Image (tube, rainbow, N blue to C red; front, side, top):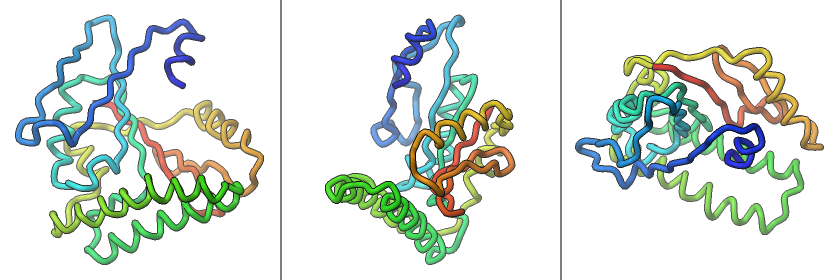
Length: 203
C-alpha cells in the first residue's frame, strides 16, 4: 500500500479520506486537515465519486482547488458520460461494467469473488449512475471540460511512467491486458476494451 511504499523510500506520508457525500453540499468547506508549507498535497479523484450527483462536480472541483494540490489524479471507468443523452449514458455505463465482468473471467476469478464484486461494487455503481442521471437529466459538459474550466490543466505522463504501468500489468500472468496511451491518459485495456483510465492534472 501507499503508506508502506512511502516508508520504504523514506518519505513522510499521511492519507486523509474525504467522503464527498458527507460534505456540506451548499458550501463544500475545507475539512479540518491542513497542510503546511513543507508538505505537498496530492488528490486522488475517482470520477465515479460524484455519479449520484453529477451537478455537484463544479463545486467539488472548487473544493479540491482550495487544497492547493501539487497534483490531482483522476480515475475514470468510462461511466461518467453525463454529456450524452440519458439512454446513451446508461447504455455506455452498462457496457463499461460488462467489460469489467468479462475481464474477470479472463483472470479466473472465483465465483465468490465475482459475486462480491457484483454485490459491493457494480450494483451500487449502476444504481448511483442511474439515480444521478434521474436527478440531473439534462446533458452536462464532459468532466474533462469541467476540469479545464475550473482551472486544471492536464499533465502528460512521461515515457517512464508509461513503462512502469506496463511492467505492473505484465506482472499479472494473464494475456490480453495491456496499457495504452490516449492523449494525456493511460488506459488499462482488455481485448482492446477500455477498463479504466488515469489522468493527471495541475491547477
